[in-house]
Image (tube, rainbow, N blue to C red; front, side, top):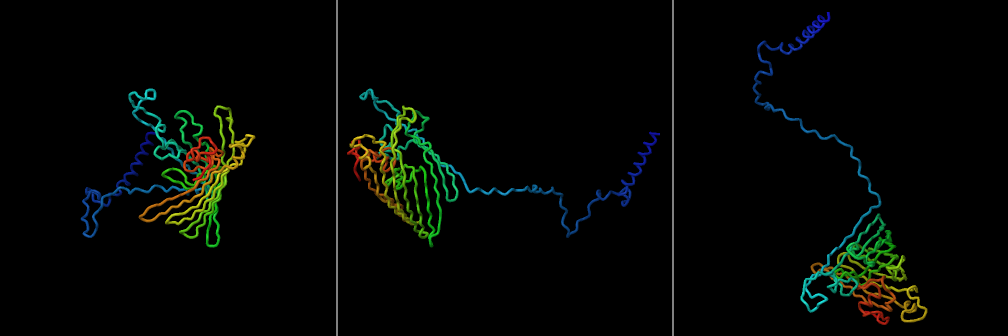
Length: 379
């Protein structure tokens, strides 16, 4: 019974399938080709020729949801700096120091030992023999605020022996705040800067020095900028700070036998600028001390505290830039320096004409070698 039932089921399925398969051919005479096998009818003169099947055109990718870019915050941080790394080699053929009349041979020396213009703190310095230098500054800024900290130095300590006077790490750190306000038709800006930084005036780029002064100090500065119109602007700058004078012994335990005194610095500058033709600035600064810590002798003398109180380094001068079409750029910055008892102001404070402090000015231009009378003069 099982086999008969299976055969009946198969026969029934065949009977159902045969009419379904034969149904499309009932419209065609037996033995004639089907529509797919016959020749296509002639094309109508007005109908376009049949086109071959083409591939499916590429579909655009599915759209993805794009999130909006994040809105930047009010603060942004930037890093800037540079480095200079010369090998500084002096190559020459000359007799050895142990036989100056003997034969010459090739000598390779540390370059600054063979030149007269490599010492930055010498009046003879030029930019032909610039030495190691590196600096990195990190700033955090927003509208009306600039905070910065910097590391810098002029001697790569990993190259050889340590130079204790070479690196400032950290070197500078300050914050500057400014604001705009309206005063009639004018829109002045007032800026206040505080911290440790080096304000500078009268920069001479080709000689890499300052005719009016750069101040290595920790203090504050107030600056007002008044634009009278799109062409004319006035900037008034005034500042007060302190620098640290003294000495230390690298062989002593911390704090290395350090003796520290405070020097005081005050400066003012007025600058009138034209947007197209240049500017003119008038300047004055003075550096003095009222700290007895470096002159602790109990009797009056050439280097007593009474003499140190009279010490000063003062600079007065101007700076002018003139720019004319086809004629170029003219820069002029005359100044007069006045030094009194320069021995009492050393190691820090005002840098002017490649001289650091009043003692540096006396050493470079007054032949100061330790005698107090040789550390007073002007020019």
